[in-house]
Each structure stands twice: as C-alpha cells, then as structure tokens.
Image (cartoon, rainbow, N blue to C red):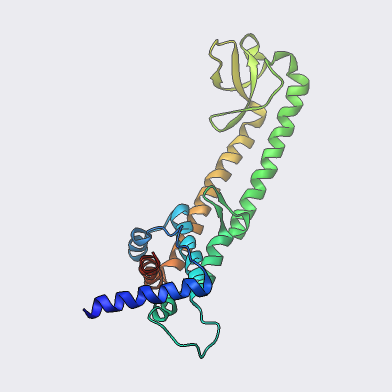
Length: 240
C-alpha cells in the first residue's frame, strides 16, 4: 500500500509541475549502460558511444533545469530528490563536444598533434595537385582520355589512353571497363602519395588516442552517468 501511495503522490506532483511549468520531454536518451560497462573495464568508446553520453548529459541538464525550484523556500515535493540526484557533468560534456563535431568528424583542434598532421596532409595534397595539374594541362595532355585528376585505391592518378601507357611512367592502379583507359599514378607523385598515406595512418592513430583519452575521462564518472540514466528513466515513467 505504501508503494502504491508513493507512486500516486509522484504522479500527482508531476501533474502539478506540468500545470506550473509545461510538459517536459525525455526523448533522445540512449541506453548507455553497455558503454558504461565497457568503460569500467578500460575499453575505448567509439565516436557514436561518446556522442550518446553527450546526449544523455544534454537531457540531464535540461531536465535538472526544469526541476529546479525558482524560490528556495518553496515547499518540496516527492520528485525533488530525483531532480537533485541528476549530474549534468558540464566539463565532460563540453570536452567531448569540443573534440567530436559529428559522427563523421573529429575537430582539428582536438589535439595539437592532429592539427599538425592535417596541416601537413593539406600541404602535401596541394603539392600533388600542383604537380598533376601541370601534367594534365601541359606535358601529358595529349596522352589523356580526360583532363582530370582522379583517385584510385587512395592514390591520386590521371586517366591515360591505353596506347600511350609507355609515355607516362608510373604505376597502373586501375583500368576502365573497356580497357581503353588506364589510371596511372605518375612516378613524379609516388613519394608524395606515400607521404599522404603515412599521414593518414598517423591521423587515424591520433584519433584513436583522442578517443582513448575522452573515454578515460568519461570512465571517472561511470557512477554519475548510470545514476543520470536511471533517474531520467524513472522521471520519464512518472511524467508519462
């Protein structure tokens, strides 16, 4: 009976709050318990999992703000303890958002090393384009099917007519369906293409290091994150 009466009191108090402050949405909260278990054993979370933690904290902040008393001397109700238990962890949320721009993009400023690697990639890419543009618009123009620079197997190539293959020294990476066009990586840019590939591997390693660091920071707050998830779930049920 006591449990039933307590639940009815929570429902009544939720309704009172809706009358006073309008309705509250709990949408967008993902079940992060699996990710929290992985953090507890020292695993590194992926981009999606870290963004799900941010979404949980965004909701926690919004719901805590909704539940805050405007006047300190207002009478407390049966939901205050639940709202008080929420921890928005703004520093953790801000740090993850600073480093991860979207599910597909890590910010250049996530680390000084990543910024330097990407700057080098940009410079090397521009040097490759300058070299190939000189060939496409000049010395090799008559040997080409089209005056374009293309990518094959992650390498910059130019489309050479098969009969002129010997006129453009380099590595053949692909050919057209008819065999009339060969996609050749000119010898002049092989080293630059290798440099780009090495930088891409360094970039990936640095991104892994950034995700590991963010995961280590999140692992310090697994108890708070679990509490946030459980409290939001409970409040969602009560307000529903």
